[in-house]
Image (cartoon, rainbow, N blue to C red; front, top):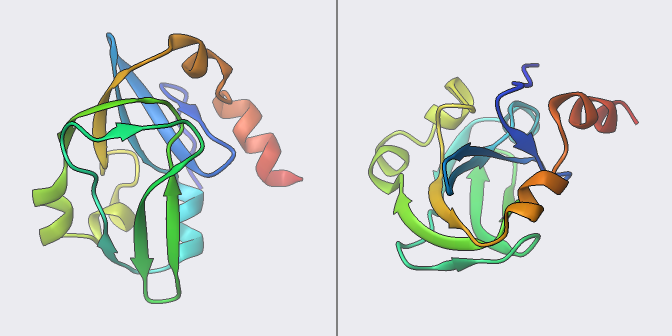
Length: 126
């Protein structure tokens, strides 16, 4: 299982990667592995407001449908709907490239409070 150091993690198995005042959001390698073959990703619309720890969509797999929880609050400025609609399995193939949406971060303190790669890895071991 891969956990990258260039982003931070939510205990609810989503990641956030900063790009200036914006952040890309996706699901972790651990999450995609637990889900199995991803068949559908419900991507939020541009201008939707995400709230930290509140669900913003659903990811469906051959095993289960699971809610996606926002690691950060902010406004969606871009959605990866075309890629994920055509190739939902991309989440399994490259979970750290298969971002779901890009948001304008509302509060950088929320980002700072997320788990580092080491902290996320330790949480999985518990």
